[in-house]
Amino acid sequence: MSSQFSRRDWLRVSGLLTAGLGSGLRFAKAAPSVGRGQSSLGQSSLGQSSLGQSSPGQSVFVNEFATLATPPDLPKLRARLLANENPLGIAPSAKEALVKAAEIGNRYCWMEFAQLKQLIATDEGVKPENIMVTPGSSDVLMAAAAHYAKNSDQTRPDRTGPGIILTSAMTYDDLLERASDFGAKIEAVPMTKDYKYDLNAIQAKLTPDVKLVYIVNPNNPTGTVVPAADLEAFCRAVAPKVPVFIDEAYIDFYEPAERPRLGKLVSEGLNVILARTFSKIHGFAGLRLGYAVAQPDTLKSLRQYTNGEFAVGVTTIMAGIASYKDKDWQNHCRAENAKARTYTTKALADMGYEVIPSSANFILFPIRMKAKSFSNQMFANGIGIQTREFNGQPYCRVSVGTMDEMAMFMDTFKKVVG
Ligand SMILES: Cc1ncc(COP(=O)(O)O)c(C=O)c1O
Image (tube, rainbow, N blue to C red; front, side, top):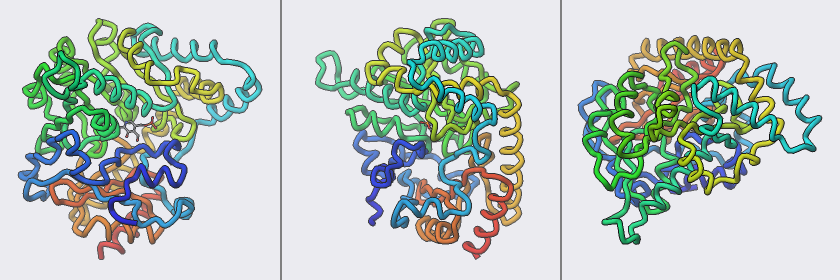
């Protein structure tokens, strides 16, 4: 299997493409695939970072799955720390709801949809018509990619060239790759030296050709966040000109009091699109549930590219309602994640590794050996992780598992790096 074998190909072969491993790995073919949209992903300023990056180069990652001979290797892992899943599983209340929902599996679930939308709308301070429920947030990302790339079609007489999707380097690339496939140009602004979105630099790049601004907060793979007040000010300045898409897949790992509350911007009428998933803190990566919060007109446009809300089954919806209400379970998962993340960050720092401070359920840090060899040895020892390569510097991205899993990760890491 060559390094040209992308994660998407691998997932397709293994049948896992729809199973929730969507963790931003689609640029496995490295810079050339990004280059389809003439992305500036490689023009990073990170060469000056204190984290040991050297010369500017191409932002790529190495295909960490390349050495897995067959899909059954996955269950053999002692610690599955590669897809930012919730290691604690779904809430007991959600399990109970799942079983109950099976009894009404013969019925269309209009009522349950309405109930979930109402719950979310109340929480976000928006109306139910501002919510679109999807099987995971990937559907929202894919719909936005198709819609905004289509509306950037360079063959249209009112366009001077391909439309631009403006974003940051070192970010989640599923939406970007899809938009690039549809003909959009991806422009990625370098991150700040502390691995955060540089909102000022992004704003400075706005032109009439920019069709969408894509922001991931907390960001995958860096785990960094932009302060809530800065993000809000950015949206207020930019959204009147260009839609701002904020991918909040990891937002639930924030302490609730510190979370950006951007639903209010939607209720004020701004063209902000929030994408959320139940795959992370709720543990629904396999059950598939997500949603968008946006203007009704925007949702109407995005619905053209989805199967509509009946793509989600009643079991998932009812379990989702139970989980959404179960703040105790969410608090428990958040606290356990923070504990295991702090333990791992400290253990790596004690070995002299400079870990990027993470607000999510994964950690990124530069490693001192070749990504592929590192990845091979970790997998061979039953520890599933991911690797990335930015500016020629290999990184490990490890999802935060249970304390036991993180202890196993550290033991194996020490063995592998010598
Ligand atoms: C930043 C980000 N956005 C969106 C997703 C999509 O998640 P899902 O389709 O499982 O909801 C992921 C998955 O890992 C992610 O990391």
